[in-house]
Each structure stands twice: as structure tokens, then as C-alpha cells.
Image 1 (cartoon, rainbow, N blue to C red):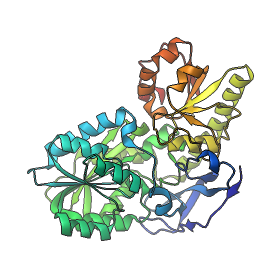
Image 2: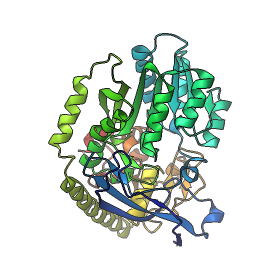
Image 3: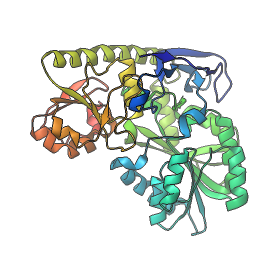
Length: 431
């Protein structure tokens, strides 16, 4: 493919503590933006590609990319939609029920969700008759959410927008950031916005992919330009302390291959720090997340995974097998580009998201088609690019399995799933 490397903003220091002693441990190469799917007429045009390098701060423990692509480029027209999978609406329904039960005292209490996407979580709050408002930078998603009756402001969350929201709506009882904190370049500005918007006894709840799971399950494909930071609890503590806040509770989740949900309040708000927080901090220490050697070992495992998966796919292809991909998530494009998997190995990719159908994957230019095409073509193998929804996919594709189709799970070790193991959980596949 033709590559065009645009101007970029290089980060020479940690975005939380400002430490300049940051060391690169993983280089994934010049890569197009993971959600920059192409229309057919764009295939012959040069694609903007940005270096995708990951660094470690030896002072506060933050893992981050060494550059920030302008958010206006990545998020103003966005095609990831939370409601596409069956898993996420169910997850959000339980999420909203917990927030309402634990933290809301009155129907007038405001819940503000930053990065609210198409309003999947807002809809769950609406069903519970909670007063909820979203703020979403992608104009297309904000428009769709408002059209569906889910109040959404089209803007980025920052101190400026938070002050404007408080003036218009009053203080927020709860502020939620669901898989959004990793997307923020200026974390100090975000926490300043949180400080400006939250009422004195308010709570902020953030759900982020957990660094322990990324390393433990070798989930390198969750690294792409939209994800600027990869969080453990220790650097998050440092971040919130900048504005006199603390993490008082934490909960590990299996969603997205392993996440952590942290609950934040002002110091002195009367909420005791729970053992869940101290327990995870001790676990992070035991797993040596403060050691650079842990990260170089992870990078070496990624190299091994690349060799094993590409060798497996080439062996299957050379035997005459037809292979397709299931799911066109952003993470899949990190894997496809770094592993150099293109149409020589995958005939096509199926995806449920109408916004991606008829498009081509960035970099490797693999066509994305509706899931209904799967049984028409009946490839011999499906590479599960959306491996974090493996249970859901296996359940949906029983007919494909009955016809002899098999699944290839790429992470953490490439393996072929036979048709008789539908009941195996995502967690078990990742051990």
C-alpha cells in the first residue's frame, strides 16, 4: 500500500506525571488509523499512516503511545457503534442499574456520560427514568443519539465544555467515562473538567481496559492510535490526586478482554477506600507492573504470536482452505497490519455494523461484507478478529459450525476451535 506519514505530535514526557524517563518497548510500525475504513474509490489514494510505538513511564507506571493524533481527525466522524453487539447493551443495562442504586438519591440528580457514542448506556438510564445527558465528539453519533431521543451534546469533554454544561444543567451527581479515558490526550484537562462539573459529594466512574489483562493475555491488538494510554490503578491514582480526588472502589470485568471499573470521589467526601483498591494495587506490585522487563517480555511474545498465527494461516491456505475474518473492530486492524495479513490470506471479513459494510479495512484493504454472506460463502475457517465477543459469535454462528466451519482464535496463542465447544467462555479461551 502507498503510505503517507502526516505531521504528528510526539510525546516526550508522561502525560500524567511529566516524567521524561519514558522508554519504548513495542514498535508496531507505521499504521493507518484503526477506524479509517475506506470506500472503494479511496483504495488508490495514499493512506495517512502514523508510527505506533508504546512507551513506559518508570516513575508513575503509565503505559502510553509516544504521540497523539489530533482528536478532530479520529473522532469527528466515527464508525464504532456500541449497540452493534448484543453483549454491550446487556453490560450497560447492569451498569446503569448499579449506578442508579448506589449513587442517585433523586430523579433530578444528573448523570453525565462523556464519550456517549450512539447512546447505548444513556438508553439504559432512560429506561430507569434517570436524568442522563451525553457528550459525544462524533457528529454522526451525536446526531443519531438525539434523533433517538437520547439527549446528547456534540463536543469533546474538557474543562471548557464541563463549565458550560454546569452553567446550563447544574452540577452532576455522577460522571461516567466508559472506554473513553484511554482516548484523551490531555488527561489533566479532563480531570479539571471533572472537578468543575461534579457536585461536592459526586462520583465519577471510569471503565477502562486493564493493563494487567492486556499483558496477561497478550492483547497487543488493543493498541491503536485512539488508545493513547493503557491503565493500571497506580497511575490512575496519581492522575485523580492532581485535583484532590481518590479511587475509593474498583472492580475487574471480563468485557473487552478484561477491564477495570474505578469509582472516584473527592478526598474528604466521606467514602472510605475499599479493600478492592488495595487488593488490586498489591496484585499489580506482585505482577511487577513497575518493571520494564515485564514489558519487553510482552513485546517478545507478540513477535512469537505473529510467527505462529501467520504460519498457521499460510498452512491452512496452502492446503486449499478458504479463510475469512469475523468482525472488523479497530483492534483487528492493528493485528492485520502488524502481522501483514491481507487478501492473500483472508477472502473477506463479515461484520454486523452497517457503517463498515461495503468498506475496506485500512492498510490491508480487505472487503467488509454483511454477516449474512457468511453462510452463502461458507469459508472453511473464520479468523475471530472480534475475539472479545467470542461467546456471542459462537452462539450466533451455530449453523456455520454445523456445516463444518471452524474458528481460529488469534490471542493469546493461535488455536483452532472445533464445532463442538460452543459453551467455552471467552475467559477460558484467553488462558
